[in-house]
Length: 404
Ligand SMILES: Cc1cc2nc3c(=O)[nH]c(=O)nc-3n(C[C@H](O)[C@H](O)[C@H](O)COP(=O)(O)OP(=O)(O)OC[C@H]3O[C@@H](n4cnc5c(N)ncnc54)[C@H](O)[C@@H]3O)c2cc1C
Image (cartoon, rainbow, N blue to C red; front, top):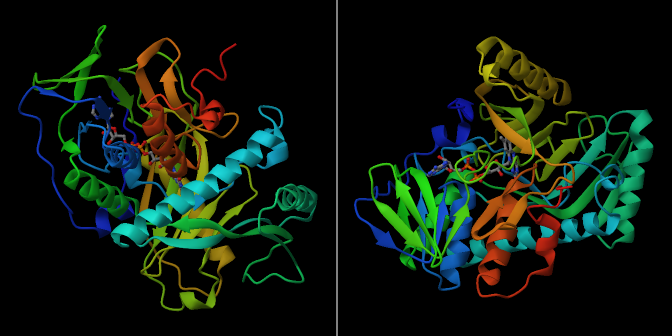
């Protein structure tokens, strides 16, 4: 079955003109690392592998950054989807704290890339807020605050007395510098532009349809019959991994987003914060450089028939209403509505590393709401692992961690 992963009018591929079109593969070629997938993850991998002088090629079946990269809210937070205490069942508090620290490291890395190559993707480092408007949830937010404070994160507890936001907050954890936002379409292209100048080869409209492993490496076959030979293959195909493995990674759902038109009086709200509420499923929202708000959430269990207009409209309407309730003084008109597949894991972390049964098959899968930061960590650590440098933190993301 050909499942569609993205649906609707995605803001980032609508507001941006085509930045660059890459050619399709017309020859048989050799490389060291074959990266399959030209979304933000493939671009991040291409950047780190090329930066470390490793020959790499990206093969994208369709167009650059038109998969789930086009629908990500691109709200970057060092924290995970669930609170530390909720994750205790699946991992340790130490691991949660370590992943928070790694999240900060990934945010810093993106900041360094921007400092070095310029800000062409509206990157902005912000504070991040996790909050509840319900008295009954105050305790759990306070507990999360305590865990982060004791671990040394620069956090502030928000309550009704010191609430700087225009909406009701009963308790909130405000993390200084704990977030960021960017335009994922332009970020992907920026990474590719930098890397292609350093030797990364990128092919669009070049679907990988077959993979063969041998003693010396791996050969992939592309849709028009050309072959690419490499030492390893990196799966950066997002939520679509069937061609490479039968392994099921994560629980599938569909996540929804709406983006407003630019709002003239947006300055009356606290813009420099990326925000997530404590609802189940949660909602998250951010502003854009042209004064829009994007809100995401209202996830539903994944079924192919959810790309059914009536069902989607209901979820979009809920998100719109939520925004209107939160920001009653703003003139909110929705311009873009879109949705797509999303996958979460029990411990909220993605999958980075080698297949336990095949040392030539590597994965970089940013599952969970922190997909972009996980991809950055993947790029950093996997490009070192390529040279045989063990990366202790890869343990957190290892492929078989849920196998019995
Ligand atoms: C609604 C929504 C909101 C999100 N919000 C956030 C957020 O705020 N912050 C955050 O960090 N993350 C967020 N995420 C997660 C984030 O979007 C993903 O981690 C990220 O976009 C995944 O990028 P990717 O490059 O791995 O996947 P994709 O962008 O899907 O790229 C994979 C590419 O692989 C290509 N491909 C697949 N099969 C083949 C093949 N056989 N041959 C060649 N190419 C192939 C596809 O065409 C596609 O372009 C969100 C996800 C969703 C769905």
